[in-house]
Length: 63
Image (cartoon, rainbow, N blue to C red; front, side, top):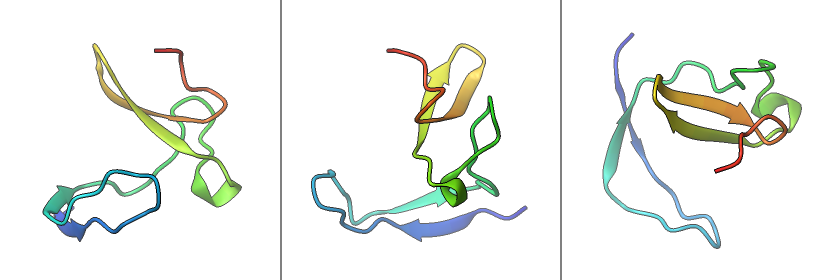
C-alpha cells in the first residue's frame, strides 16, 4: 500500500496546519467494535504502549 499525501483543511474550532502530511490508513474503525465514521461514530486515536490504537466515541478509554 502506497503512502498518500493529504492536505489538512480548516474545521471551525480545531487547530489546523497547511503543511502536507503522509498517511497510510486504509480503514478508520474502532479497535473494540469495528464501527467507524460510516455508522456515525467519532474516531479517536490513542497512543498505548503497544502502539497507536483507534477507538470510537463509545469505547475510548479515559486519559
